[in-house]
Image (cartoon, rainbow, N blue to C red; front, side):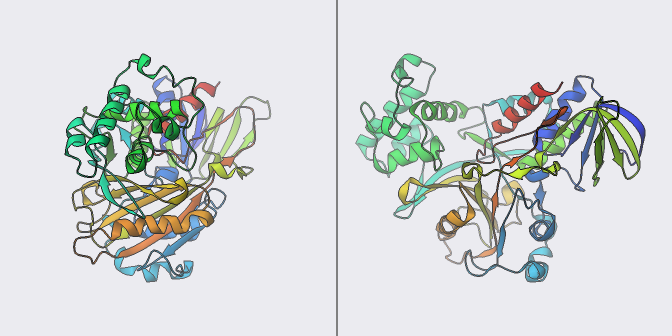
Amino acid sequence: MTSDSLENENFDVLVLGTGPVEALVASELSDQGRKVLHIDRAPHYGGHHTSLTVSALLDWAASTRDRRQVPCVEIHTATTTGEPVAAEQLQQTFADLIQNDRAYAIELAPRLVRCRSKAIDTLLDAGVGDYMQFCGVDRNYTLGRDQPLQRVPESKEDVFAATWLSFVEKRKLMRLLDALGGDDEEKLADVGDSDKSFAEWLSERPFALSGRLLDAVVYAVARQGRHPLTAREGCDAVRRYIGAMGRYGRMAYLCALYGGGSEVAQAFCRLCAVSGGTYILNECPAIVSSPNGEGFDVSLRNGSAHVRSIVMDPTYAPEATASQDSNTSVARALCILDAAPLGDDSTALLTFIADGNAAVSLLYMTHATKAVPKGQSIVYAWIEGTLVDSKSLLAEAIDAIASKSDSNVCHPLLTAYFETCELVPPIESGVVYTKVSMVDADFDAIIDAAQKALSAIP
């Protein structure tokens, strides 16, 4: 239920933030019979995983974002490069897009659900199918500076039909699929003791992969980023990918309509409310330790409450600081295009492979996911690292997709670049901070983060 006022009520747990991790935690606690107070300072659900209209995106960039977590944002119009638009001119510059504002569902950190995964099991067990709709990510591509757009084979039939693979390469790929496609650990007896990277392991016999085929397996299937995967990590990633296919068709991933993180968050917030959880949006509570040392006193605009423990998104901790570890930073871009270069009803996962073994992950979405108006598309791009080091690579990756338009008239309407950093909160008794990898676009990272937070709650 929602509440506009509380009169010194007692709660077992206060949950701050309505991102998907916090929503899962609140739902589980409420289902266990605990009395939950769930608060968000924003007027909407989703936290950093919310879905935004164009005007909301511009407002976030100019004023409402947490500058510790997102230290820099650049907005461009008509081109993916050039001078960014000044914050005070954002609304005026993008007036045409704002006229169709409600037709957009823009994500800051898009995530996908593997068709066989902890995430899909959690969604099914909770019955959130009543609240959510999904479509399949029906294509997986690689492309690069010197490589055309190539579809990654996702079945034995695809392997034989792939025109960009030679007969020898097809045999090598079939050998790899046979080794990694089941649960027989004897086939991978040497992997556990190997100190080689996944790419090195694949390049040796019996697989001896090389060139574009090696890149496809390492980057597009195993999803390696800037940092090399070990042989064990790579094999496990490929097995998860192969194992995900066949449950809902030939695709390995599903994509939620209207924005995955926001929809998951709202679905589990509804479940929490059904079990008796109390919700307050657009509220910034003042919290102090209780004088008797038992729990916390919470002051609200209209009322107060007492809670025994707190679970919170680190952005709610005033003392939290950005991590100095650059390995936790993610450079991101999103670009709204005035056409749909890969098809108007298609959703695709892509990997742009650049020199120096750097790979940009991309997600292409259209009206099929209700992300943009019909005839347009949106491309998300991300890579580990800082925006200073990665912006040109992100722009190059997006431009490579835009250039695939058959009509040759595909242009960016809006491009946003930003960097997300991990926050390091203080250690405080009775407070559990949620933490989720911003690098991993798999929804299993959300499930893992929620389970870790639940195990830490007294």
